Length: 239
Image 1: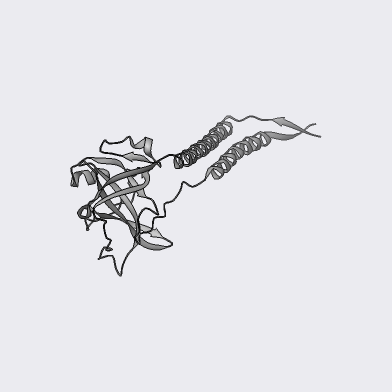
Image 2: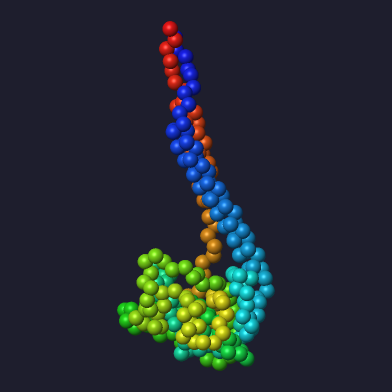
């Protein structure tokens, strides 16, 4: 006759407990990411409904304007224009045109991303992009440039001083020592009649994906504990 008995072993139990704790931690991490992404999307949609904030000479609080509509009056500085490399549109390589704007009545600058333009015949010649002259009113959305560097990004200046690998406000301030707003204006698509493409991406809705990953990690933790409980029972022949 067979009889089941429970045989507890410390080493497997500790290993299972640590692994299950790791799985639960990863599940919590994905759940937090889902909450954070949902909040980001809600903030983005809420700010789209706001009236544009008029940007002046006083430096703004960037975090309060992130993704918010803005409006600014001033003069484009053609001699300070540069290009943001490695930008694609419909699979075509190109650059974003970054033109500083001197805010009307001050020396304060704000960088304006005027949109995308394709490379020409080769990368040795920068695209020719006209710069509007005179007083202009630019409308768009405020975007805070990332200060993170990619692991493989070279820590050196680009060979072409007008072709940048990323928007670096500190670098711009070093080259042009005037006050600069701590964000970039992504110009509205219908704000100017030119050949630049202004197709700005919206925050990706990954809430469902993060929730799914979270449930998978929790399920793996539960399955591991269940397997351990089943595996600790042993058959024994009774006399």
